[in-house]
Image: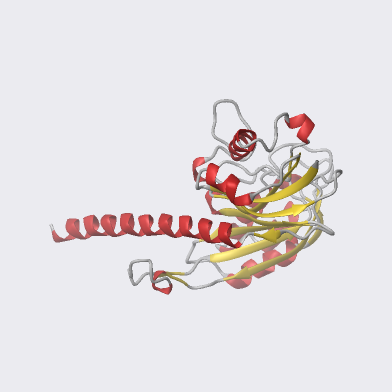
Length: 286
């Protein structure tokens, strides 16, 4: 009997989140169904099936983690051949029997902002406010026993994304400039990152001040909770989860396979974009 941890990549668009829910398609349900189908696990309790974290509906991942015990040698591509294309295993690692994936050393989230009018200098100033250890009571959807969390780092970048960089994609001469906000911490509260991103955007568009943002943190015990609206889930990616003493072995074929799926998705989106643009141009001609 061996215990194995698997790193999971998925596009959250067509999932109702990670956690199992009755009569709804979820990432966890897909994984359990196919692991049982292939004989890797039978009873969830006996296999000690565990997950690292639950992402919301629409949230994506390149590095969520599950673990379980099995008599069989885990073959990544055998499982991937059974899984649907929008959820795939990309790495594995042998782990001790007491391993619990929820207790991570570091989690890395990326939120993608597509606003053209954001002040990058203000975004970096907001990042400096959030770094460190704070009480994030105002940044969670529900009351929890402890709301103190530590943000180890926040990195902000603005890469150029060009379709012509890939020869397999049509050249639409379209360049856009998303802003990547990469957030690193040991653990996060429910909705914490998306509420943080609301504050980032509101400061960068001068809807609230830097002082307002700072006042959302570390509230006094008798202070009423602030109602911060979450930003959309489809721009959030769980990029990676790291553990002390555990090194995942990436599977090159699985990476190429998932990349091909993403490129095919992008090609279809480019085609839809071209058709929509053609319709709009036709209206102008009329």
